[in-house]
Image (cartoon, rainbow over all chains, first blue to last red; front, side, top):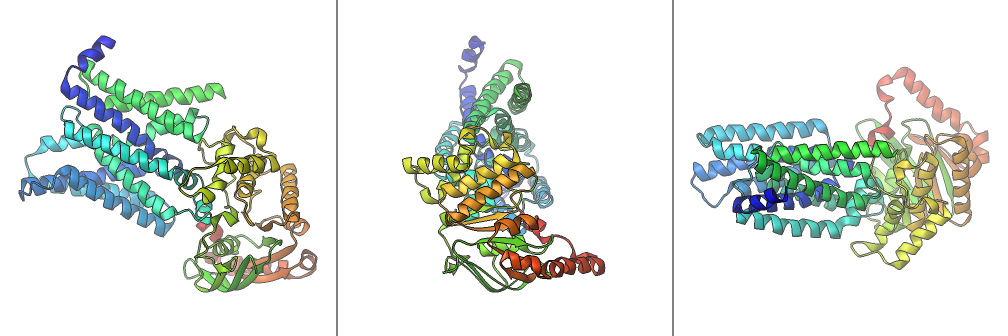
Length: 278
Length: 257
């Protein structure tokens, strides 16, 4: 086992993949912990599918219009962040994270993505990398962005932790306590968009949201407190990424799928442990 | 200065009026019981008083300031409808919940020793100190209510606003809970309580307001029992039910977030 890991880490692309994955495993549960308990778990999926439209637009602008400054990563970031604020605005107006409007935004984003891709034509390879995720194409530049993002998101969550916790637990009371609920909600959805886009290249559009949800749900089964649940979620996510990436190397399977399957396995184990303890 | 002062308030979510020309004030030290049938606008009235909703017409002030602009969040302890029901699974401990009462004091800063002392005091007062490290979801309904009251005490609130806090709680815990509220009121806490059980309200509250879209009664509990307000308020809703079923859906439920 250790021999395999040492062997794997002799390849530079596996080093980059693992490092980027380990950053994802910090980022995703950090924001996911404040989404799952508010029944906002679906927002990750929605933003990922909308970000796909952003990727497609970026590819179109680069390939067809020839503007090399607009990378798919950048356009995905902008589109996802705008969609996040739109969803927040809609939910403020209606007083709920409406699953119907969320489903419409989700499919609308993906539909726009497919149409824009077909306009571009003949670049199916780089697109499928975004849909299913790819660890082989992670660059050092990408790893550096992930590192920077991890510092940024961890910093924001540390500063806003009290606000985020109060709002997650009891939003009405947080408003009465005159915490800045609207600002924090907007901040949270924009951070979520950042994390989704950053993790998308590795995890893929379809599976990226699982990292926001599954480790947090697993931690929620066994954590003795909220603070502990955030830490446990990160530990479980790291375990999933490490195992998933290693499995993808040893058995030549898709890393994103392996990571999510391990995470779900850990969730099942946590749920069983909770039942057994009760 | 009144703690809460509503003056000629109108409010509607859609084109069906929820509140019409409501004027009501709560004085320091008062224990106001707010009663009325389902969908009578009680929760909405409380949300307007706390600045969570803006009236369509009229004014709402909180400690002398317009309710929407009031920003001394620590002066109010609010327990929203359904907050204590425990139907949500979130792994927070009792201490974590009570500590939230200190967040308006701390803002973005760190919590200090005096914050932690206030939390321990509040848990001791409400009798949940020995549950401090237990998860909220493991507690009974009666214990959960005490945790929410502890949060308001930790906050050093001057006004306690409770929206049907005893739904789904056994009779014994309810009595103990209302005894606790009575003691807090004796110590000077201003309380506004929305409660279905009119018997409880008339027993513990110092004043009663009966509303159904408009105010049907506002005065002492003794006078309320002798008045026709109850029949007026509840009878009106009965008639509405018979004549216009389209207007009987509960606005209280619509706004619970």
